[in-house]
Length: 106
Length: 118
Image (cartoon, rainbow over the protein chains, first blue to last red):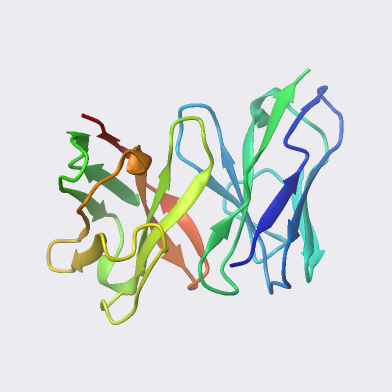
Protein backbone atom coordinates (compact mmCIF):
# COMPACT_ATOMS: atom_id res chain seq x y z
CA UNK A 1 0.00 0.00 0.00
CA UNK A 2 1.28 3.45 -0.89
CA UNK A 3 1.25 5.73 2.13
CA UNK A 4 0.78 9.44 1.52
CA UNK A 5 2.28 11.73 4.15
CA UNK A 6 1.05 15.29 4.15
CA UNK A 7 2.78 18.23 5.78
CA UNK A 8 2.11 20.30 7.63
CA UNK A 9 -0.74 18.70 9.55
CA UNK A 10 -2.09 22.09 10.49
CA UNK A 11 -1.15 25.56 9.39
CA UNK A 12 -2.49 29.10 9.35
CA UNK A 13 -1.98 31.86 6.82
CA UNK A 14 -2.85 35.53 6.58
CA UNK A 15 -4.88 36.87 3.64
CA UNK A 16 -2.59 37.35 0.67
CA UNK A 17 0.02 34.94 1.97
CA UNK A 18 1.36 32.06 -0.11
CA UNK A 19 0.64 28.55 1.20
CA UNK A 20 2.28 25.28 0.18
CA UNK A 21 1.11 21.83 1.26
CA UNK A 22 3.32 18.83 0.57
CA UNK A 23 2.35 15.22 -0.06
CA UNK A 24 5.09 12.59 0.04
CA UNK A 25 4.38 9.11 -1.31
CA UNK A 26 6.05 5.99 0.08
CA UNK A 27 6.55 4.78 -3.53
CA UNK A 28 6.54 6.55 -6.84
CA UNK A 29 3.12 7.49 -8.23
CA UNK A 30 2.29 8.71 -11.70
CA UNK A 31 -0.10 11.44 -10.64
CA UNK A 32 -1.54 13.14 -7.58
CA UNK A 33 -5.01 14.48 -6.96
CA UNK A 34 -6.08 17.11 -4.44
CA UNK A 35 -9.39 17.75 -2.68
CA UNK A 36 -10.66 20.55 -0.49
CA UNK A 37 -13.10 19.84 2.32
CA UNK A 38 -14.72 22.71 4.15
CA UNK A 39 -16.27 22.15 7.55
CA UNK A 40 -19.50 20.19 7.30
CA UNK A 41 -19.24 19.76 3.53
CA UNK A 42 -18.31 16.99 1.12
CA UNK A 43 -14.84 16.96 -0.43
CA UNK A 44 -14.43 18.92 -3.64
CA UNK A 45 -11.96 18.14 -6.41
CA UNK A 46 -9.31 20.86 -6.74
CA UNK A 47 -6.47 19.44 -8.83
CA UNK A 48 -6.33 16.38 -11.08
CA UNK A 49 -3.43 14.75 -12.86
CA UNK A 50 -0.95 16.57 -10.60
CA UNK A 51 -1.35 20.05 -12.05
CA UNK A 52 -4.69 20.46 -13.84
CA UNK A 53 -7.25 22.74 -12.23
CA UNK A 54 -10.72 21.29 -11.82
CA UNK A 55 -13.63 23.21 -13.26
CA UNK A 56 -14.50 26.36 -11.32
CA UNK A 57 -11.40 26.29 -9.13
CA UNK A 58 -9.71 29.71 -8.81
CA UNK A 59 -6.35 29.99 -10.51
CA UNK A 60 -4.64 30.95 -7.25
CA UNK A 61 -4.53 27.17 -6.70
CA UNK A 62 -1.84 25.13 -8.42
CA UNK A 63 -0.32 21.69 -8.19
CA UNK A 64 3.08 20.28 -9.07
CA UNK A 65 5.39 17.39 -8.44
CA UNK A 66 6.52 14.02 -9.67
CA UNK A 67 7.64 10.63 -8.42
CA UNK A 68 7.22 10.65 -4.66
CA UNK A 69 6.92 14.38 -3.98
CA UNK A 70 3.92 16.53 -4.78
CA UNK A 71 2.62 19.88 -3.63
CA UNK A 72 -0.46 22.05 -3.63
CA UNK A 73 0.09 25.80 -3.61
CA UNK A 74 -2.32 28.62 -2.89
CA UNK A 75 -0.69 31.71 -4.36
CA UNK A 76 -2.58 34.27 -2.30
CA UNK A 77 -4.57 33.02 0.65
CA UNK A 78 -8.19 34.06 0.94
CA UNK A 79 -10.56 33.56 3.86
CA UNK A 80 -12.68 31.14 1.84
CA UNK A 81 -9.66 28.83 1.42
CA UNK A 82 -9.81 27.82 5.08
CA UNK A 83 -10.42 24.07 4.86
CA UNK A 84 -8.80 20.67 5.10
CA UNK A 85 -6.89 19.51 2.03
CA UNK A 86 -6.28 15.89 1.04
CA UNK A 87 -4.01 14.34 -1.55
CA UNK A 88 -4.95 11.04 -3.22
CA UNK A 89 -3.30 8.47 -5.45
CA UNK A 90 -4.48 5.48 -7.44
CA UNK A 91 -1.34 4.49 -9.27
CA UNK A 92 -1.54 1.22 -7.42
CA UNK A 93 -4.13 -0.60 -5.33
CA UNK A 94 -5.44 0.24 -2.90
CA UNK A 95 -6.40 3.82 -3.55
CA UNK A 96 -5.09 5.93 -0.68
CA UNK A 97 -5.58 9.41 0.71
CA UNK A 98 -3.20 11.53 2.70
CA UNK A 99 -4.18 12.23 6.30
CA UNK A 100 -5.10 15.81 5.52
CA UNK A 101 -3.78 19.32 6.12
CA UNK A 102 -5.98 21.73 8.02
CA UNK A 103 -5.52 25.28 6.79
CA UNK A 104 -6.81 28.13 8.91
CA UNK A 105 -6.98 31.86 8.28
CA UNK A 106 -5.03 34.15 10.58
CA UNK B 1 -26.48 19.00 -12.91
CA UNK B 2 -24.74 15.96 -11.47
CA UNK B 3 -26.31 14.80 -8.23
CA UNK B 4 -25.45 11.91 -5.96
CA UNK B 5 -27.84 11.29 -3.08
CA UNK B 6 -27.01 8.67 -0.48
CA UNK B 7 -29.56 7.02 1.79
CA UNK B 8 -29.98 4.04 4.08
CA UNK B 9 -27.77 5.04 6.98
CA UNK B 10 -28.61 4.90 10.65
CA UNK B 11 -27.83 3.36 14.01
CA UNK B 12 -27.11 -0.38 13.94
CA UNK B 13 -25.83 -2.85 16.51
CA UNK B 14 -22.44 -4.51 16.11
CA UNK B 15 -22.64 -7.65 14.01
CA UNK B 16 -25.76 -6.53 12.15
CA UNK B 17 -26.18 -5.50 8.53
CA UNK B 18 -27.11 -2.34 6.66
CA UNK B 19 -27.49 -1.46 2.99
CA UNK B 20 -26.64 1.97 1.63
CA UNK B 21 -27.94 3.38 -1.66
CA UNK B 22 -26.74 6.21 -3.85
CA UNK B 23 -29.13 7.59 -6.45
CA UNK B 24 -27.38 9.30 -9.34
CA UNK B 25 -28.80 11.88 -11.72
CA UNK B 26 -27.63 14.46 -14.23
CA UNK B 27 -25.26 12.14 -16.11
CA UNK B 28 -25.22 8.77 -17.86
CA UNK B 29 -24.68 6.57 -14.82
CA UNK B 30 -23.81 3.46 -16.83
CA UNK B 31 -20.74 5.19 -18.30
CA UNK B 32 -18.93 5.76 -15.02
CA UNK B 33 -17.19 3.78 -12.34
CA UNK B 34 -18.45 4.53 -8.86
CA UNK B 35 -16.95 4.35 -5.41
CA UNK B 36 -17.73 4.45 -1.71
CA UNK B 37 -15.48 6.49 0.54
CA UNK B 38 -15.97 6.97 4.26
CA UNK B 39 -14.92 9.42 6.93
CA UNK B 40 -15.00 8.53 10.61
CA UNK B 41 -15.99 11.41 12.91
CA UNK B 42 -13.16 13.94 13.06
CA UNK B 43 -10.93 11.78 10.88
CA UNK B 44 -9.67 11.72 7.29
CA UNK B 45 -10.96 10.08 4.14
CA UNK B 46 -10.80 6.32 3.67
CA UNK B 47 -11.56 4.63 0.36
CA UNK B 48 -13.93 1.67 0.83
CA UNK B 49 -14.87 0.09 -2.50
CA UNK B 50 -14.96 0.63 -6.25
CA UNK B 51 -17.08 -0.77 -9.06
CA UNK B 52 -16.58 -0.28 -12.79
CA UNK B 53 -19.31 0.95 -15.10
CA UNK B 54 -20.46 -2.54 -16.09
CA UNK B 55 -19.64 -4.17 -12.73
CA UNK B 56 -16.82 -6.13 -14.36
CA UNK B 57 -14.18 -4.83 -11.96
CA UNK B 58 -14.71 -4.57 -8.22
CA UNK B 59 -12.17 -3.66 -5.56
CA UNK B 60 -12.32 -3.39 -1.79
CA UNK B 61 -10.21 -1.97 0.98
CA UNK B 62 -8.73 -4.71 3.15
CA UNK B 63 -10.64 -3.31 6.13
CA UNK B 64 -13.99 -4.23 4.58
CA UNK B 65 -13.14 -7.14 2.27
CA UNK B 66 -15.38 -10.12 2.95
CA UNK B 67 -17.91 -8.01 4.88
CA UNK B 68 -19.02 -5.32 2.42
CA UNK B 69 -20.38 -5.79 -1.11
CA UNK B 70 -20.57 -3.01 -3.67
CA UNK B 71 -23.04 -3.33 -6.51
CA UNK B 72 -24.99 -1.22 -8.96
CA UNK B 73 -28.19 -1.21 -10.97
CA UNK B 74 -27.63 0.83 -14.11
CA UNK B 75 -31.32 0.68 -15.00
CA UNK B 76 -32.13 2.40 -11.72
CA UNK B 77 -29.10 4.73 -11.70
CA UNK B 78 -28.28 3.45 -8.26
CA UNK B 79 -25.12 2.35 -6.46
CA UNK B 80 -25.29 0.11 -3.41
CA UNK B 81 -23.14 -0.91 -0.47
CA UNK B 82 -24.25 -3.96 1.46
CA UNK B 83 -22.53 -3.96 4.82
CA UNK B 84 -22.52 -7.03 7.04
CA UNK B 85 -20.82 -7.99 10.32
CA UNK B 86 -20.62 -4.31 11.18
CA UNK B 87 -18.08 -3.17 13.76
CA UNK B 88 -17.76 -0.01 15.82
CA UNK B 89 -14.85 1.04 13.61
CA UNK B 90 -17.23 1.14 10.62
CA UNK B 91 -18.92 4.17 12.19
CA UNK B 92 -18.49 6.92 9.62
CA UNK B 93 -20.04 9.24 7.09
CA UNK B 94 -20.24 7.27 3.86
CA UNK B 95 -19.90 9.15 0.57
CA UNK B 96 -20.55 7.86 -2.89
CA UNK B 97 -18.36 9.43 -5.54
CA UNK B 98 -18.13 9.34 -9.31
CA UNK B 99 -14.87 8.03 -10.69
CA UNK B 100 -13.25 10.01 -13.48
CA UNK B 101 -10.58 8.66 -15.85
CA UNK B 102 -10.18 5.62 -13.58
CA UNK B 103 -8.19 7.61 -11.07
CA UNK B 104 -10.04 10.35 -9.19
CA UNK B 105 -13.41 11.59 -8.00
CA UNK B 106 -15.05 14.55 -9.66
CA UNK B 107 -18.42 14.47 -7.88
CA UNK B 108 -19.32 13.47 -4.34
CA UNK B 109 -22.63 12.98 -2.60
CA UNK B 110 -23.51 14.71 0.66
CA UNK B 111 -22.83 11.56 2.65
CA UNK B 112 -24.91 9.28 4.86
CA UNK B 113 -24.08 8.54 8.49
CA UNK B 114 -23.65 5.00 9.74
CA UNK B 115 -23.30 4.51 13.48
CA UNK B 116 -22.45 1.07 14.83
CA UNK B 117 -23.15 0.88 18.54
CA UNK B 118 -24.97 -1.25 21.04
